[in-house]
Length: 369
Image (cartoon, rainbow, N blue to C red):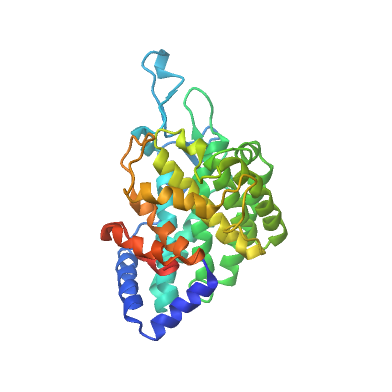
């Protein structure tokens, strides 16, 4: 989150700016619904990891399926882009996603309204997942995205902890609340420090660090974010500069992502990777690096990537690659708002009118418009 933008937003609320107050009302409705959300934890899953410890996060690879031609269906076989509903039996991935959404909404509602009930709920959700002895998650992802009959977890699974970036932002917003103490803040940063160390030193972490596609991008988003959150700006700067090599290898001069175009949901994955780079560029600003206008060795740039994707995402041009699942334009909407701001292009802002109201998110509107 952009601190300066947040201050401007709060000033608009205090000055009773009509458009901003309408968005805050939408935010409050969502936050009010979350006040009754049950506290979620890695302990809620019905299945225990091979470690024997339910405090360990676990999940199953989404694109791998039971193989009826094999004994007991093992090993599972890959069907790219086709989600196996069986993965829902393990709730960790679903619940950490809900946790991010809830804590971001609640903490922003507290920041903009000052109503302590929102901070109290956000704090309770964070403590339940990270601190409480009986419910806390151990700071690693050794057992994420396991493939039955092949392994108990993979580096690829680290993409699931990208939700931790939003939770870190939420915790930062809670600073000053009676419901979020200095001790709470320190304990959460200690947890993130341990998780960052695991990401930088473990086999799974190293595997994901070397990923060439969107997995590599999201790895950098996470380690840079966590380094900043825990106060290690030197490591964050090192990682941001290192990420330029990945951008060089991923992006063509025209602005497309060939490794994402090779997928069966190529439009979705191109948007997903662009989203990651926009997040990384936002984080890079915190260490004085401008990735927004960085030119690759081929002459590519993030704006070129956005411009290439724009007409396809909005349905102005026919998509000629594979997209076997319906494309969710809601995932592109925040990119429009960010691009308008970062590239100073009013045309991008006008394009937001082409997105249906139900695909517009109040949180994205508040943070990026």
